[in-house]
Length: 103
Length: 103
Image 1: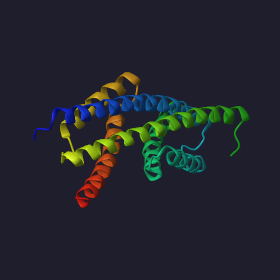
Image 2: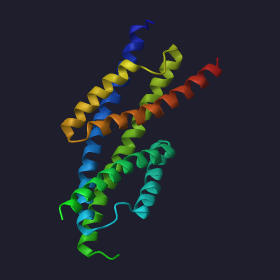
Image 3: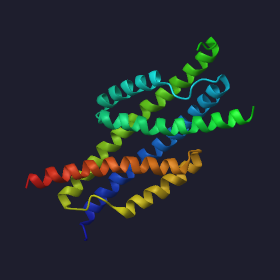
Image 4: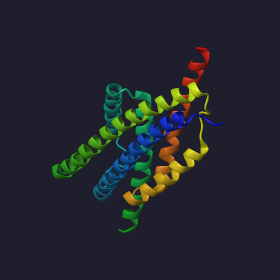
């Protein structure tokens, strides 16, 4: 189906904004994992548990509140947090296994 | 278990950085969904399909390349994209249903 040029230009403008926002998020996520990898190494060295339920609950409360203020669905913010934490725990477990095998 | 104060301070410093990064990401996501909701309304008005596989493939290629440059696992970037697009499609379908029922 063919759409009017002004409709396609409007869509293209939205997509350029979405692409810019995605670039920012990818770089923020890269920096976040650099930081959590440092946390993983610290925890492995100190033999701290990989998972911290108290910290995770506090993060969820904080992110839901931030989402509310920003007009983002708080349930989506909570699912986003769970999605990221799953990857963090996967990485921390891998760091722990490498640390243990280096002893 | 009790850990040395300097260890706990080190952990706390990492967590403050992570919290700041999360705040930035939540606000970026809020703005991203504001933009995709505009796209959803435009598509509904023009009766355009909700899903655009060509656009999605181009986004994945771009995000994987950005992730590579930023030191983020490209597979994680692709999973993040799929996670966000799933929510966008859910929202666009809801917008479409509201638009159709308003006719």
